[in-house]
Length: 290
Image (cartoon, rainbow, N blue to C red):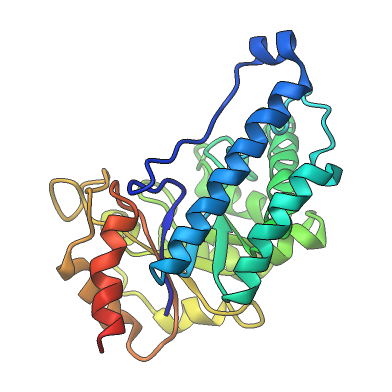
């Protein structure tokens, strides 16, 4: 079992640099490259810190390359020697230490949108993430189903239809997560049956958004056949069990609930907490002392 966290590291006080389109218009792709290399160096430092502290699961930021899919960015970063040098350092550490690296495309990546132009932009974003995560040595791209658009059944079918049209490289890495408002774990399992996508179970989202049906964890695990160890998300509500906002930390009660559900199943757990690595370390220490 590997425990991990997302993007920022509070101990290192990391930041990932972004860029306005207006600035890129003024300073050109040289500025995009400059900020990208700084972001990649920051990622390398986080990976190194994680290894020293036995954290072998990490979600890389989607913002490593500013304006990654914007037309103004004509920099062929995946062929740039300076970029590839840092990416190679990260990938070597990830592969040597069997670290799991994932990414989570943002809220505007919506494969089930009824608007073709939104789907096309979503695919462009997935192509960016797929290319980047391969260079980092990672495997998982996590997405949500999208919107219901007044007809949840049609929305689920549309996701499956668009998923099946994706390049094989993206399909090998894409995982579908249940969300906290619209698509329950039962919904995403139905989508998985339509197209074969592995299901990333978020236990807090399930607690906030479910149809009353008990979790059939064996059914979730079955979606991962041929895709490796299942990936699971955990968080604690800021002010209550079903509060959608994330707490600074993860409660022992919530973590033990997940362990009980897992039983003897091996899974990697992503902590989605405001204090990032600080939320992980106490539980990691607990597991290592067993």
